[in-house]
Amino acid sequence: MRGQALVETTLMLPLVLMATLLLLQLIWLVFVQYNLWLAASYTLRTGALQYGSKVAMERTLAAAMSAARPVLVSDSAAVDAADFRSLAARLTAEQLLHAKLAARIRIDSPSAEQFERFSETRFDLVLNQQVTEIAIDHPLVRLAASDSPEQWLAARQLKLEIWWCQPLEVPLAAAVLAELSALINNPVQVFCAARAAALDKPLWGLRHSIEGPMLSGYRRF
Image 1 (cartoon, rainbow, N blue to C red):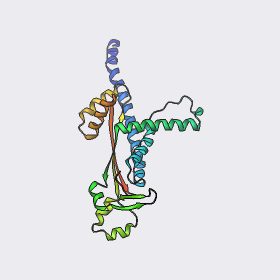
Image 2: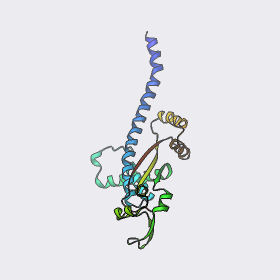
Image 3: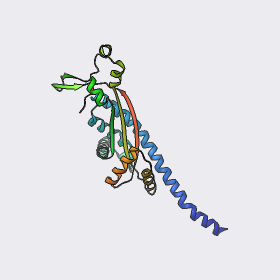
């Protein structure tokens, strides 16, 4: 009986270990997905206030996703405000570099057709130059003057689709999920698989779509 129990334990232990590691990795992916939802909200607001600037949105996304980076601190009481700011700046810089290589912000609305139809040229007092944008001032007047109010309102909506390739860090589980991602035929996983080969690390694709009204004129940069 003892020999049988030993054999069963020997056979089951690797499976239990693998299941535990997979569970840890999946829990971490759920946390990162939740963090991406929050980051997408901040990213959308930045785009809505910054004329749809992708550069500004990428910075906000990187700063928000820095909260998903695990950090080990031996003595939290010894971390003062200056150290915390330095750590936050370093994590944000690392996530910004990661976003440049393994993330994507796609603007689905306003589209190129919407911009061509509803944009106008006006003078920006801050930049001291002419700009072309979908203006949002005097909305009631513009809505009444528009020959297609519903399409004009749709052109004032900023709609984003954000892709984020999350590094898989848990040993063994990372390799298993990397193989699984290769079997999932969707654009996000294909995108991340290509980046994984370039970065030489396993990645899992996360995606979130979000939309909201522009709070500044929309410009194409």
